[in-house]
Length: 482
Image 1 (cartoon, rainbow, N blue to C red):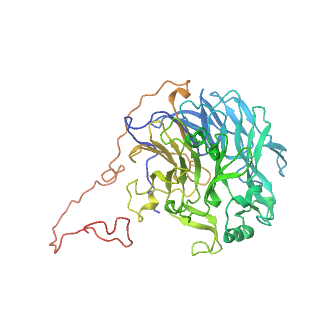
Image 2: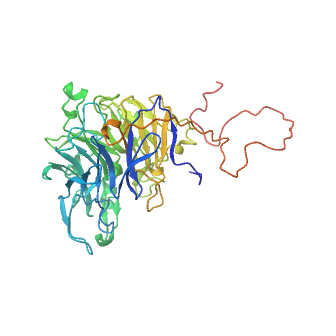
Image 3: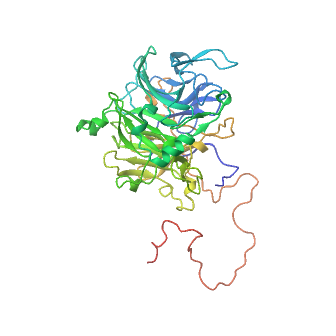
């Protein structure tokens, strides 16, 4: 997919009358965690803090990590999870999941946190009326790594995604390991064969033959209060944990009491109940929309596309590893009981020609979606650092492009979160100034010629030019002039 080498960064569009105003937090490349207002002004920077993801809590507290393990020895292992105040002081820390001695490094205790965490009081880590995360105490749900062996899955070493809950003092109150529930995940024989041979092996330093990042869970949150549990469906107990596994194309709910998987979508999307959804591939940030927000109780997920899953070989996957492939993304809101797609944002809703231009909404990895109180959705199209807000009718009302690049020369943003102004009492509410959309057909950089020709001649035509078939069929083909 082609991208211009010249493009604007920062806030590029803002409609104050339709957007939900607040501050937005994200990881700014290697700079640290940054907080911006609706006009893209950087109002605060926690320099050096690593947000995987970065979250803002009431009172101007930010959560992140102070370091990451050398990738020669581990994959995305953060040393700790910390809560930092406005002035950068660490007011809470967890780093006692595993004691590690890596060659050439000081012996340290690690949290091995990655991808997600939640604080008691709020199930998902973003604003919902009446569901404020605790800042002076409470339990914390943490997604962490644990190296395991399980010959039922593979004869290779495995990197498991432990989901733990710790108290304010750092004591582990609950631990759940997905490798112990392999039979509940629903892999067919073809997927099991691929997993056994190659459980998504990642090779790092002293690990020799590598380690199998077999599920790569990237989100874990509480189900939270919801209408299904209130109607008697125990699967949706507010204390249960909903998580998603990028490499397996699975979204699931784990029962806190029994440890069993009680609700699941994927990895097989061919059943009559799920076939209309299509395969969800490499998804991120699957969670239940909290009570008090439009769509409460529904599943919201950024369906990345890209490449993921285990199954039968095909031309895109000769050995069946990452066998599902799609070159565009979707944001889906799904009723978890009926599996009806209640709302979606795809290339079609973005106004692109489908499928020829579907790639114009595409992030094959990372990314997220947050439901806002006015019914809008904040979307992080992470791989190209684009944050944007759309209405329920799919109108673009805010857009921001991160100007910060990382060591891989990308401006990727793992996730972003919008919080209300009152969560940051250290700042006065900023003036909200509209940003009109640029007409790209006439916009030119300095020195470039304007649109239009100096010399025009007319050529006699035989028939009027009518837009017709493209080289490949588009989604609206056959709908015109029938």
